[in-house]
Length: 209
Length: 250
Image 1: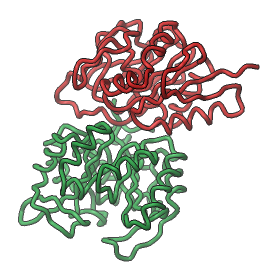
Image 2 (image 1 turned 90 degrees about the vertical axis):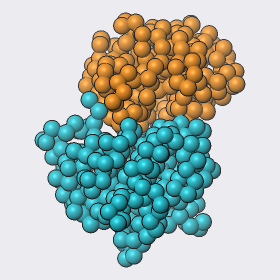
Image 3 (image 1 turned 180 degrees about the vertical axis):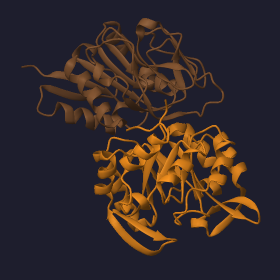
Image 4 (image 1 turned 30 degrees about the horizontal axis):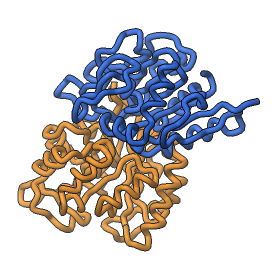
């Protein structure tokens, strides 16, 4: 049987060690192989792509540009291929980011990434918070309803279509914590830091899609 | 709703968790990797580890310990102690730390906070502040409280926020190690003057102390001895807080 190929993009935006290890543990003894993407790649040779990110939107976009990853990644996503974006890896699916300066995103899920509106909030939103599912999903199943995940961010998805929001979280306001369009998923939290529910989410993404 | 974080803190020399007051009577409490694994499994929301004797000789082993811990836990890891420049921060992040805590080096060279947060993002830069009352004023101290700096506590807390710190780890040297409770007064002063998360540290001895810490609006509560001595399990603390209406991850 041909092995499924998972690509893990190293956008030089934070450490990929935790997610790398999580994926390796999950695929051990299963028909999958993991490849780290650090430069231009052939988008037809991957079955799944995971992009973790930390830090600023503009930084991740400019890193991906320098590494010549943007063009194949856009093609891959426009094909509705399977993708999981984590934190900033989710945010860059949007049209624009407003962190530091206005930066063009990948434009896959329409909306903007803007700061939390409530000025009294403690920012960054840092710690464990609950996700509330809007609908049933094959990967983000009911078992994740009202579970806590680890968040650390100051910017959120805004002006997004309701139909693209799979789960929301409350912090001063409702904001999208999981977005989904076709086979493309984005999570605002860090599943790789979210203990067993986080690992189960990554496991579902890899094995169920 | 955002949960209040319960954070066990490991004071580490090489690969051992130790306990000692002001570097005297140091006792080994256990193996750092084993203890980190235990806390991650038993419900800690985050883990903090500090190199309390960051000599050149001990540092290599400490970094190896960070690497080993990062491999066995899947909750956030904050690492500090002996961080003096940007390359120390990069080394710790590369070893698997999610956040790096800077203390004395930030006091001596505040620009380091800005440089570090620009390079790695505010979310992974924690500034640890040790506070102490001196002549009716709250001052910033370094070297475990032995050296009083010219910095006023609140001015410094505001300054580290504007320099780009993502979080403040606030220890009161007036209450640390005594187990009579957090320094509520000092913590409230800090939380009401900054808009970034504050972790309360220093002084926990009972369950009620955790609740009083929550009331200071600190979003993380850090403790060492009560966990290492097995006086309380993390679950016990969380169940107690939950019964008092505090949002925790159970």
